[in-house]
Length: 170
Image 1: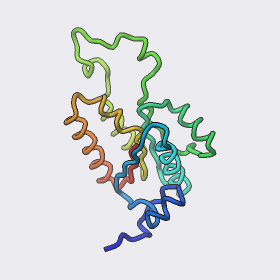
Image 2: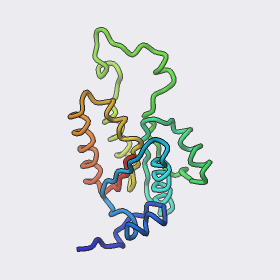
Image 3: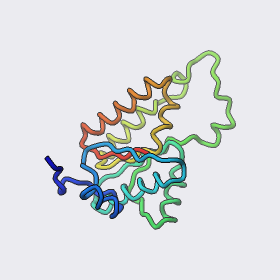
């Protein structure tokens, strides 16, 4: 049975929407893959902007770039993300300068709220129709091993699907 085109969510890219028969199926997760510099983040910008144009709630979960840089880069491309909430999980410049080793306590005991808790808080407060996670592989570095990464990523996808959110990962 073919998917109902009216239930599709625009990617924000007319050519991509054309080859996908109207865009993404809503409420599902999609991965944009490619080498660094191939435009994955730009696809995410368009995806979020398309949601903003439809008065949808949008959330950008950023693991590498700071919010100011994201907004500046999008604006330089003529993409308006003013209505998008950005959860900035990027490392601060101070992170490079500080000694990140622990001798008595584990990192989780001293670093405060976990990344998972911060994502859940952002999702709960914005109730997004669309989420862009950029890049998902950074989550791997925040989990103790490959198995835990896979469980965390699958749990995130399941959590957002349960909420009816359309998700794009890069």
